[in-house]
Image: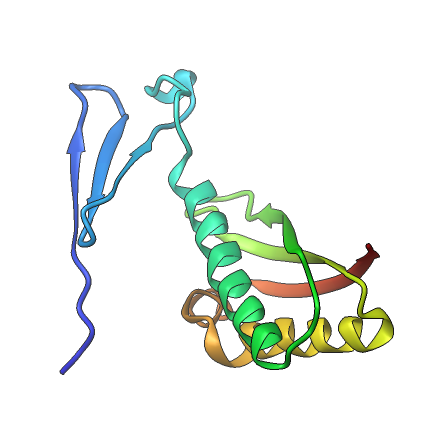
Length: 145
């Protein structure tokens, strides 16, 4: 059986602010800039997509690092993006920079590089969906603890 997910959205009046509720029961707010009808009070849908990509690749990457028993205390992911000038203004470039806080040296860096690439190329559904329109690049670095 397919893994079907459901989400419901409710507008907050006539402006462009929405509350969304996922199938797991968690609520999120979405908004947009004031000049186009929002209140600039919450994350935009396009920002949420980048957050989802970061979460997806981050969870995969950490899972792989844990299986490899790579020592670390935390992983930070910084995402930069570029969008098309014309509508539908899709992402054309996304760069994910993974920073692993570890005392594992070069081996930890190699593990991080391999884990991030496996996530992007094989495991992360969001990466897979974005690849048809977006060049996704990955950078990795270790901060020694």
